[in-house]
Image 1 (tube, one colour):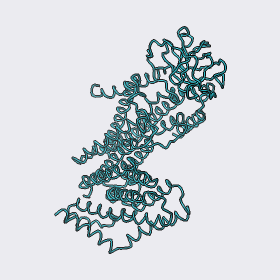
Image 2 (image 1 turned 180 degrees about the horizontal axis):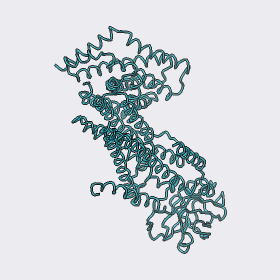
Image 3 (image 1 turned 60 degrees about the horizontal axis):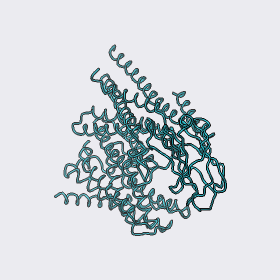
Image 4 (image 1 turned 90 degrees about the vertical axis):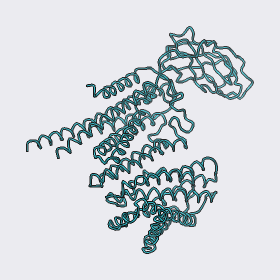
Length: 76
Length: 219
Length: 340
């Protein structure tokens, strides 16, 4: 979980520098703003996927705990 | 019958208040001391938006402190007794009316003290006072319901603020915008739109509270 | 299998929206145009054009370019193509009629009409009038390719429409689902409906968080700030706060039935205020978002026919996934309660 948070922070800080210029010169456009703002699409898509999967993993862990409880309940 | 019941209940609220005066004085003291703090920290507020927003923030906190006691001050036994002798809805309406009177009076007193101590740069005084009346009235109706909800859950001041602030923010925003129009001396469609919105919000909040209270009062 | 058809539908819709959202190209457009001269009226000058997704080389034979000032065109005498995205346009001397800004237009059969408003500025104060008026031959202005519209500032990030916006739709749908369950609870006091309402609020908040984060990133790249003072953004943030307050309220009440009743009432309040905040207030106010304060709405031209099916698929897909997750949470909760 900490690793994931670190990853997200890294991603965000990367995009922060990536989009810090808004000049529309060809060179800047090509390098910093990144593929005609395609970078932001990719980061957004990644964040959504990461968010949903992180949530599903948490749900999964909760379910495992629940299963354990249920099994223990049956034994006793 | 109904109106008589409500009238009696409002009278009871007023009587309660006069009997324990420290409660009302407490809120007035709260407003005055907050305004004094504002005066000492800002000296004079030159920008109209800041001046306007500061007044509304003071009013918002005054509303929370004033109305938080609305349902909490009654003991459980007394509430149960009231619910059996009167319609629970009548009690809600009475509390709403009482809180409306209280907060509108507080708002008018507040703007007078605020104008006296900090300054009153608003250009259209009439519209500004209308904004204060409409805004305080809508805040009072909303917070009455919120205090009923908060009294069911542990009922502390923090819960009241947590529940009330986000939900009543549209009311506050409409109030700020309308009074901003008044402060700038603009009376156009924009101002009346917000006045209409404030009235509509007041009606909507009161109607919702009235419809939902039967589910709330039982323990 | 058949009972779960809607889950498959959701997965299919999402797969389609992600595929079509990323695979469809952006329409060609002009990104930058640089003039060689400050004064355009005394000598011939060139304009260096940088295009995006254009096919200058392929379409070289029919490629035309002209400048527009006050609705009067001036054609390029020669179009020198360097590669697919670069071209140098040679223009005769021109003095503007009124304002010193020229709109650049290019046309070819394959790329259609490319327009860059106010592309070139001239320092000329002479307003003698254009000398070289011409008639560009544009057979049809239709763009006959399947692509997303080319919009300045947005560029490729227009695709975020299929990623960021559905988060909000999913959040609002889940909150509506929660409201429906709240009403059902208040009608029969069946605690199951309260559990459903509670779980869907939790999932709605996850979607809200994702919408907030992605929106913040997108705002940084298009509007230049992480958080803009926008009524719609603030409205959704406050809606999330009020639903967080709903969770706090639930925590503060012990008795199950009482908790269900009180929180249902509060969430009805919160929902109505959300409608005011997101639906009504932005209309009275200026907003950067489409559909408010003079901004174009998704319905008229931003959301064109190429984007519409993809957008609707994404919205419906995420709503289904949201309801699905909240259903799973609900079942887990039932199981837990049956065993404790």
